Picture (cartoon, rainbow, N blue to C red):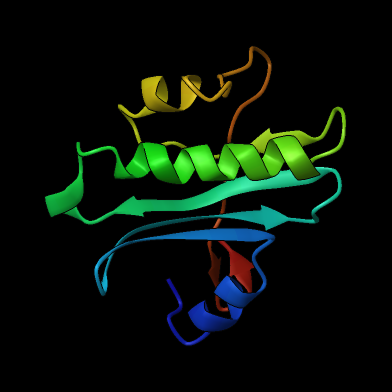
Length: 113
């Protein structure tokens, strides 16, 4: 990750959630995209010591509520799930789709690798 542009990237989020326990940030999640047709759930993260306590579910509940209120009919909702986390995201209506493959590249010296 290019940390030099991370703050600007976060500010461009369509929607963001931060989970706090007192003053401590214990998790986050956000939506990126055009805010009209494409919504990508991105950066769902929970601090290791707070995993398994429902923090991720609270984050996804907030994201799902935002989408229900703001995403128009037939909007595309996407995400890349970490291997082994597919069952968690299926609870929110997200599934693998036959005939579609998730792909990505990373920019290196102006070339996608």
